[in-house]
Image (cartoon, rainbow, N blue to C red):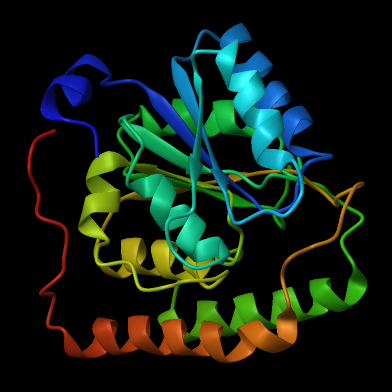
Length: 258
């Protein structure tokens, strides 16, 4: 983590964590798109690309780009390969007051991140994207994944008695204090997309939901293996549910002035 001096100097800094595994053909376009949008909006930012044990040239491409762009940083996933491991590596390096998780395939809309940032500055601990509410649109979502997505998210919604309908969406923004309050983070793979928001909700962090757009990748292949992730998602959902009903509020947010 950055030291206290860095934290003090960057109270409004927005950090982006982008895990990338064999994304040589898309990572530069993704980083450039977000960078251009944030500069246009005059939002102070840093982009942290985590190379998740790529076997292509994604890391080399980004390191070369970072030499000419002081806001870009490239780190290696220090754990075993895995989306959650990559995110956890990024969370050890960000300096901002806010941190957002962004996919490397440009499926997320940079303009939505601007909306998240502005919403967070209203006093929210987290801002969650929802692709399935009025004002959002989804393009090229494979039908079998869409059906499964809706089943899983509705199941989570009823189990935890929450209104939020897109828990599995990775595209979310958290304050630094919220991330610290969600530790220890257990997920090693895509189930981290469920662990972070569920913990934030059941631990009493104030969150807002905004409509966000999503576009299916045009290049490369998805790393999400549904058959492999099922048990991991179930584990983390069960873990969070047990915390909710058995912890007696031991992990609840401590109300302190920022």
